[in-house]
Length: 495
Image 1 (cartoon, rainbow, N blue to C red):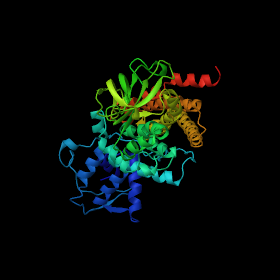
Image 2 (image 1 turned 90 degrees about the vertical axis):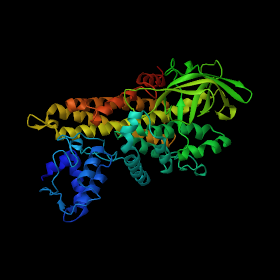
Image 3 (image 1 turned 120 degrees about the vertical axis):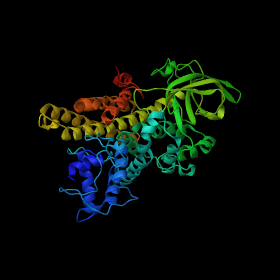
Image 4 (image 1 turned 180 degrees about the horizontal axis):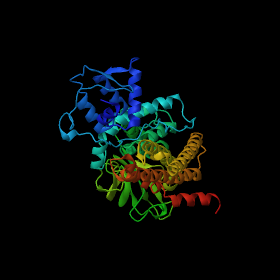
């Protein structure tokens, strides 16, 4: 059969098939492989595309090797005949216009001239390959299931620990990576954010980028021995509980209280919109220990199973469905003084010190997500035809893609520069706020443009651009709204 038919059989878009063909041609100088080898190549190129895997397994069953030689060049492709409904009936029928099922690797390019990045070194590139492999083997095959369940399987989190994706900055004596280099965190954030399964990886980025710094900076020797091995090996997933039902960005309005009683605090109150709230084993809770608006805040670590600690709803969100986001309730919870992070009353300053990294982490993900959304749109604009030519060849669409490419490149340069500043200890609160609001708003613009250019298909959830649209919306809200970020920047200008 012809190449176009093979494309439909495999269920890939032409651009992906071109990559597959390049891989196949590299397998042998003659450009020929057996059917079983073709299946391996398909799996290597897109192991996380569920309908591709199903089709490949049916068409090229490893248990029944195909003896015929398959030539994957510009000529014909000879394979055993496949019935119209698939080898096992219409249940596995392949759509003629199969939608893409994933974003490309964060290392991929859009085909336009890509800017050279100098922020990463060889070891980070090798680490990126490991993260990509973990994504493809441990996350993507399960993402749809976890999205339906509203949370990931914690076994994946433990596997991430074993793979060295957790607690890279935790000292090696506590089973951590022993390397205080935020670029490793950035690599994880970029790989996950460039994937349609990014929501399933958020438990890892939140744990690494937002929660672990509090333990690294403020924990005692005893707390380090007690918690850090679990933080590094995946036995302990973390969450940070700041937001309350009546308190959003205004930390001075926190009312969840903790009253000191001898060797423990008596904790009462509630939190909402808590990422990892359902799955977390340790929750860093921002509590009020005095009436001082800022000086009365303290950080307490609440452990799973403490009496009076209850988890409410796993909130039904617009997007990021695989990421659990919960309500938490505390009723006379006795939290040992030994579970306090830092000194009583120092919580506000601790939060302020760690928020720049949190916001930089969000900016890293937003930049990578925008790149992936743009790449999806460029690929679609090349393949989709209207009025006899690819839609990307219409001037209006070219201009829209050019504008998005420019914004994506500007965002990438800015974020990389702030990554370098963070490594050198020079990242300011205002700079992090600039990166957070601008990149997340840029992400929204790029994704919205992508949906529009996809037309009706952009409104279909089976297309990654539609899911990206839903997932992107919260980016300008969590971690500090765009409006609050502008307030921070404005005040830094003396206004």
